Image 1 (cartoon, rainbow, N blue to C red):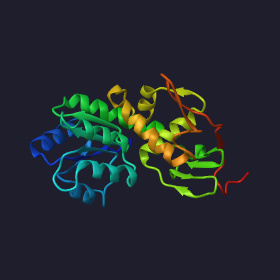
Image 2 (cartoon, rainbow, N blue to C red):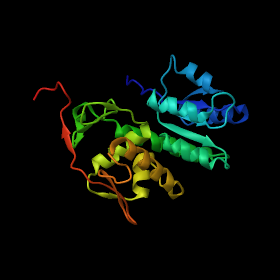
Image 3 (tube, rainbow, N blue to C red):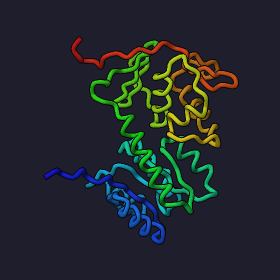
Length: 247
């Protein structure tokens, strides 16, 4: 007898019971396992004994808001996150994408569209997972990025903290050195969706990353602006074995 594959588990966080319960029922009908939480605190409690595969998080909730929870889910739990937002929350959506959320849907939404987005995000997450044999570090002019631990160190070996969104952006550049990456392509690589409305989110993230790795962020050496085109990573990038690996 063939053993059945485990169900994909979704953490659904929304304080609005009239939306959460019917949506949970629909998702179960689509073959998912659903953990419900009516607040960020309840979601954190759920995470103590269960690890979901993806989270759906409402931005506007009493107490700790959805953006704060999203940051925790991404940076501490390394979970893909789709934001559930109201139509008037454009700035919150931008902030959510900048801190690393994978996608968003605006309320009211079509449940079938949400399921399609869930499956799309899960496929991307599966493809982007780094296999053990590909755990080589990136090196550029003394800087080093460990893709498994998401650790960036400068030429002196000092750890430079970076957010999940900054890590994704830097890795996109390091995977495509000296190539011109326009904003749409960068956004698709980093956030997994084409959303020209969030061009400024890319620019803001580039500015933050420059402040981390450039000697002078106003005269960048690594991340170069291509007029009318986007950005280009100007340094040579090497993949090197992690410290301690046999030669």
